Image (cartoon, rainbow, N blue to C red; front, top):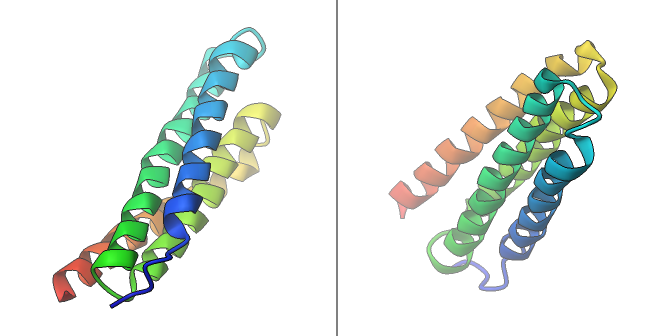
Length: 124
């Protein structure tokens, strides 16, 4: 049985709070400062940030109750949040197009995290 004190639930909850803050910042602080496309990019980052904050919580539940190995999914989700959402936030705020090259790496980390979590649950 995995360690019942998996930190991924807490990390997921903190990421969810950050995603809510990012969404509120977009809605209230950026609406008049960014063009429509940049605002859309920022909001996409916040949306995927929240999805994967919830995925981190799921990985924590799996790690603490079902199976070993779910920590890897947690790491992949966290890396995905940093690379995918982080690059979209930075791209929207700075306009530096080169940051868009990082975004797909985050998407790959998200996909790998979901596949890993499925494998861990299936293996159980």
